[in-house]
Length: 54
Picture 1 (cartoon, helix red, strand yellow):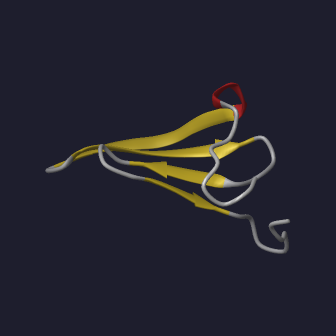
Picture 2 (cartoon, rainbow, N blue to C red):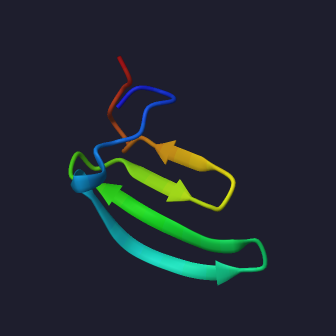
């Protein structure tokens, strides 16, 4: 994954989701091991430890 790019939606698995005052927050994990956090206003991606972004 490269910064600013989302993973293939079919490769993501929802690990958990929680209702908050801002809406639902979802934690997703890609088949490659990267995590993605989705909120109503933002998406954040976290690389697994030991991997670098090209």
